[in-house]
Length: 190
Image 1 (cartoon, rainbow, N blue to C red):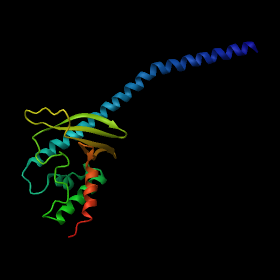
Image 2: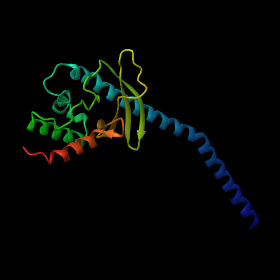
Image 3: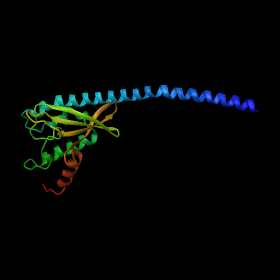
Image 4: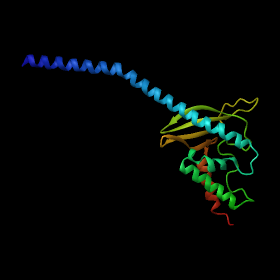
């Protein structure tokens, strides 16, 4: 009986050593794989956001009779989450109903300004839950921006990235602003 206990202990000790070795050797590879995955996601997000702003900023700076962000709803709607696209469309439609009044947003929601600059840069990217928050800074001549002009919130949907919200200073965000304006419009008579 005593021989069986020794044999069982030796077998368990060998298993314990093998498992410990696998953990010690395998763990850094798992961490490295996760790190590479995060890096790839951040690179993809950077490309997505950079591509959007490279396309959008010249349109926002052009002399358009309609808001530049309307172009996004017409030709790049798939870059927006359904909730964000719907809220922007409702705002645009409401403004069309009241052409002499301002009943919707009166600034560019993707740039957080009425006067866009020539170039916007992508700052830090941070993961918040399943979404990512990306700092956007306007490059103004002679002015160093320490704070971003806005923070774009991006999520992955069906294998692609989409904008889900835009955050501004003073804890303001686009979806909340649009909801508040929609609520106020209910009290306006035509």
